Amino acid sequence: MITAGRGDSGAQLAIIGGGKIGEALLAGLVRQAGTGEGVLVVERNPQRAAELAARHGVGTADLAGAAARARVLLLAVKPQDIDALLELLAPHVTTDHLVVSVAAGVPTGRIEGFLPTGTPVVRVMPNTPALVEAGMSVLSAGAHATEEHLDAAEALLAPVGEVRRVPESQQDAVTALSGSGPAYFFFLVEAMIDAGILLGLPRDLAADLIVQTAYGSAVMLRDSGEHPVQLREAVTSPGGTTIAAVRELERHGVRAALIAAIEAAHRRSVELGRADG
Image 1 (cartoon, rainbow, N blue to C red):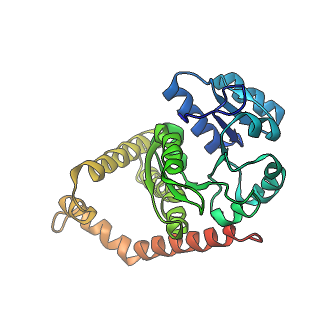
Image 2: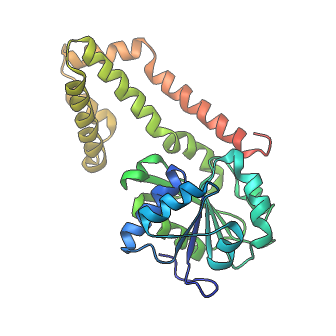
């Protein structure tokens, strides 16, 4: 957990935004610490705020209260909402805060422009497997963030998965690859399940076969140390079923389509980073 609190409340962290990513980070931190003490949640929907407080045993606050009581402010809102949030939050922020943003595509410079000069900002791109503590989070330092600030942000993210650090110039590529990446896998799994149904398998069985196959393949990729090409070739016998399938994938341009899709996600991440995106 974050070490330094503010004020007299003992609060260390305020998570601003109670959507899926905000709650995933909240849940992971509470599970790791064994308590919600020292954590606040800020949510404009009072019913949602009460729900999060009851579920995770954390406190709630408005923006001013959160800034007064917590050293670390984690912004977990949609990129389209970040400017409006920062306008409201800025009068309550000081250079003693650490601002961590998980708003997709929004550069640290844009956030820093709303805040007092010298405020440390760390930009993070998480993904939705954080909900099951298997996320991939990538962080970058803003102009005023030190190694200590990066360490603090990494400690926030570690309970919900793996963490990497990159220069901010690589963040739009990260967003396209791992931020949006789960959707590509879900899309592929959906298509494979449909194929199983087409071949006469019950939906539940097709889903079980594909989900376990996807899980096992991911573990092999992670643990074997082998290149994906080597692992694929190990399944691909001469004249067999797999090579027939791979030929069709290549014939339909699946590889090129995936690359084009990721390039499109990258372009959109760049657009979202602009104030008028």
